[in-house]
Image (spheres, protein in one colour):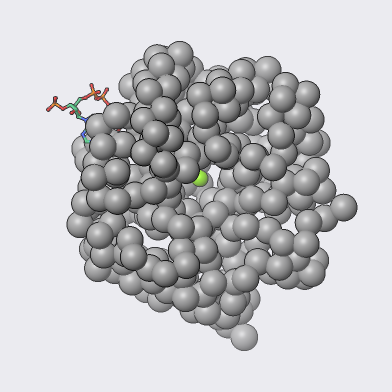
Length: 299
Ligand code: HMG
Ligand code: MG
């Protein structure tokens, strides 16, 4: 059975812009987020409180966050890699944060400069401190289906990281197919294993990349399994700066087209969202890779 409603976790302003070559001024990012909200998105990942040298595109987090933090009716999660990041975020009034783990050693090293277990040890007090401060905590797990250095990723390795994040107190998990290699059967196998290991479907979100054109097929499989939180990036912006071959987040417009076609509610106005991505594409000086954006904007 498919769900009646899906919550879209919009990542364009963070996962999208962190990987764009063009530097986007904070005012433009704020306007992007306002337009996403006006198009009906209610969970909009705003930025990252990471080391500015590691992700220069998001180095303006202190400037940006106060510009948008009081947008009505919108949740604005932000990424925090460690205690320093959490303190910066909480200091500005953030009430939803996300830690980001990896299912593989290679990506933990490349993305966080730590071994997998060292990175989990960093997250543990961060999650606790965030929960104590009353914040909602999301735990990302990258490279759940394949890794550019290690190849296939064993399912038990993914479930170990997922259960560790759950046991720390994360409210929600996001399963990342960072390089876009997953196929629907693989998705169903992972979801079944996670359930078996005590991770309920209602705390699982999915984060697909469209590198091999599988993102919507994978999403459909996850919906049939009962998943109701889906990550997507307006206009299909971005990838990940620390994973070679990580291109193409699932475009929010492509997702909304499929969901509305299935009669699933999202609260999103597709025309307004498409107009927002066309507007952003002009700032980035490159057309949106989203098929739906292209189709609707050339009608
Ligand atoms: P490190 O160099 O090991 O840091 O980097 P450190 O702990 O050794 O600290 C070194 C210095 O950095 C210190 O300053 C710290 O204060 C400072 P010093 O005392 O030398 O003057 N520092 C910070 N400054 C500001 N904000 C901070 C911070 N932390 C330390 N938060 C670190 C470790 C985690 C900081 C670094 O590796 C980092 O920032 N990594 C983030 C990389 C990133 O954001 N990647 C993209 C997000 S993940 C992703 O995109 C995948 C996902 O989207 C899912 C998918 O698409 O599949 C989620
Ligand atoms: Mg992504």
